Length: 195
Image (tube, rainbow, N blue to C red; front, top):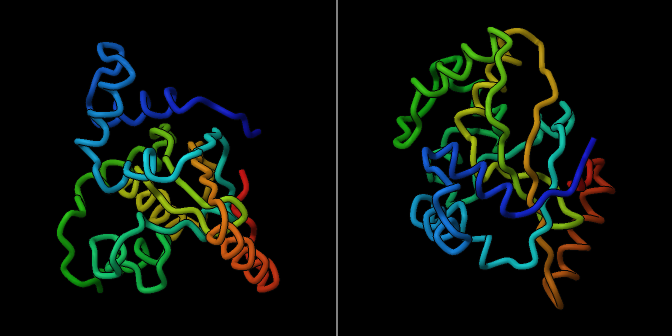
């Protein structure tokens, strides 16, 4: 089931995962702390207004298309995945045939893999998409997503995972381009990134 949630709920969750206590902060301090800790990943919160937030379950069809955090092609997670998906990166890590990548904590991935294998819940991912377009991109939780993907590759099992989904919208010319991109993606058989 998908429910709309507030940005405050998501920021509180995100800060908690990052080790902060959001209850001790006001709204401005929360956003400032998040932007300081994750300046690239969280920049869309002020750059791409409005943002609609949802809490949903990521089913396998969406998860297998999930992309690592957006950025330059040779940056950390993007460099790891030969096909641009989290699943591709997990397959590459599993085989050991991957380029050296800084910023990826293998111990964190292994810790989350152990949680998943033991049936323990891991914190919800935070993903984002542009309204009417696919795919979804991980904003926070690349290590967790990679652990889930690796577990699926190893066992053939995947349980739908909770995630906060940011849906950003565009106006004017960019909105038209986004609609055309979404149309072409639908014609090619991709699932539309609506929560």
